[in-house]
Every structure is written in C-alpha cells, then in structure tokens.
Length: 281
Image (cartoon, rainbow, N blue to C red; front, side, top):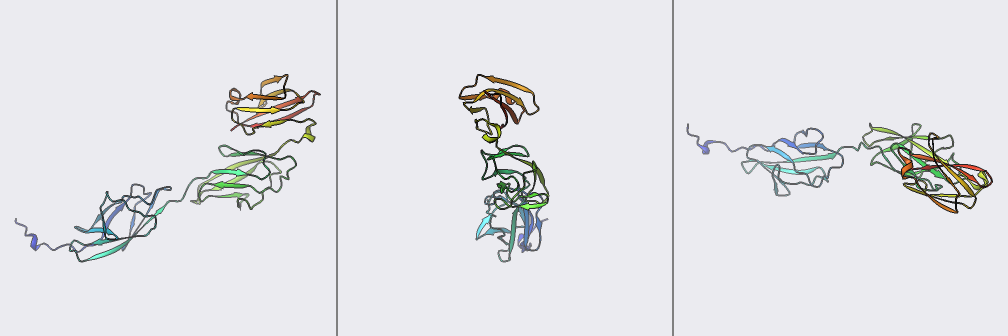
C-alpha cells in the first residue's frame, strides 16, 4: 500500500488532551479552552515544567515563544497564563487559559508567642508554651503577640483571637489555643501556661535566676542563699548545692534528661524557702 501524503489532510486541531505537573496534588481539570490544576503547598510557581499532549502536529506558544512538553519551564505565579495552540495546518489557533494554584497550608504551629509583661522569652515545645511574666501582673487580661503557620487562625474557647488585639484570661491556669490550618480542616491544640514571677516581698529574701528558659547552664545570684536543692517535675531529688556563693552557675546538661522543667528549692541563711520552676528549652 502506497500512502500519498499529499492526499492526507493536515490536522486543524488545537486541543490539549493532557496536562500535568510533577508537583500536582490531583489530575488537571481540562475544560473548553481552560485548564486548572493544584500543586503542593510551598511549590515555586515561577519555575514549573509541564508535561502535555496536543492535537497531532500542533504547537504551543506563550507570548510567541514555543513551549515544549517536559522541557520548557513556565512561570505560573500570575495565573491564569495564556497558552496559544497553533494547529498543524498553520492557520487555526486557540488560546487556552491555564490556572495553577497552590494547595492550602496544613501546618498548625505557633511560631512565636510574646507578652509585654514577660520576664524572658517563651519556651515553645511540641504543643506547649510556657512563659513567665513580672510579679504583680494581672493574668486575667493579657494581650499576646504571636505568629502562626501561614494562613492559620487561633481560637480560645471557640472564639477567634487576633495577635496583639485580643485579651486572654490566664488567671485560672493553662489556656488551650486551638490552631486551625489554612485548609480549614487540620487543627491542633496548644497548651499555653503563663506564670507570675515570684517577688522579693513574697519570699522574704532576694535572688536572681537567669536565663529562664535555659538550655545547659543557669546562674543564680544572691547574698542570702545557703542551700539549693534541685528536683525534677515529679519531685524526685536530683542534686543539692551547699555553701552557696554570691554568684553560682549550675550545669544542668546531665540533669535535664527528658525533663522539660526543673524545680529549685532555695533556702536562705535564716531558713526561709522559695521554689522556682526552670524551663528547659
């Protein structure tokens, strides 16, 4: 059989039959003259290489520059992007609008948490935040400043709260912050604990402990202390320091283990005692 190419009609099709991206979350939706596709959260939309199939013999162009499947990088950050498909016959053409959107964020983190009354930076753990405020602070009406994962919102008792605007009552103990991700589905509860620093008038003698929260070493400054006893959060005795000098450093590297807190029992030269919670980063 001899095929006479001259007798074969030149294709006038200008269709997209397939369109995909390595970063897609689901198959592209191909309509009449438009394509929509979603990619993973965090994808760089400025440099995507699509895989596509056109009508037989057709060619795709963006601003008169040809794009080739699996080869040409395209900037989809200002979607929709107009892609012109020129048919094999060199005459028929069609414009397609291709929209690439980034999936909603599913992260539910509290990235930072501050209070104007704080004595040291907040200790942010896995679903927990501990922060100390100055002695005498009214815990019933504090206005936290915080940052969340992109697009997330924070709620307390079902009411959305705004960083730097909404006041929260911490006077009755830990407060549960519910963080809902940008996707509106994923959520996580965070326990936020605000404690008031012990004042000199409360204990009858003066001392200073820093830094708190800490990592490996804490420093204690006082002219009145005689003994420091160290316990874990469950009350198990870890160590005792006697003959305290004016400034003493305590290496907690070998004490912290899996503990997030240490309790210090401070005793002055007259036998008065005070307790301090040390937050471990």
